Image 1: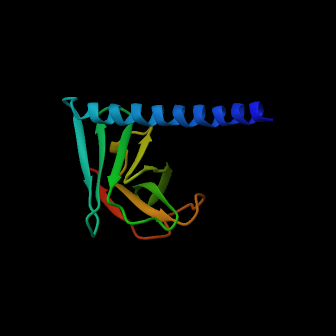
Image 2: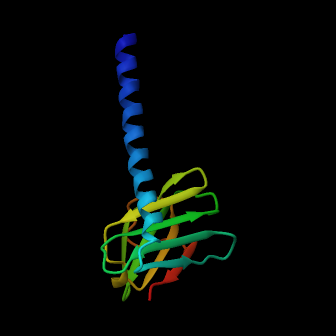
Length: 138
């Protein structure tokens, strides 16, 4: 029983380590993207002390959104991309301490607005709350 419990615990730790390594790799890639000559940083603005930004390289189909100092969530931080009234959410931001992060495989320049909301559930088709932070993508 003890050996089985230890094996299960080892599996849990291995899974968490893999997720952490993937997230760290994407954060490093986001930071290195700033060194690319065609990089863009889009600051997302909110009403308070929130700090957030979207980083991408022009012509590449990937973007990174990072945020800190967000208010305590009621549910989960969800990223929304908006174009001509069409809303698409690629997912929920991963939170580690005071930092929220998400990697998205899309062309950021095809979207008009990027925003983060605090959603009560994961399966909402449109934002149900006002944006915590947002920006227009130019």
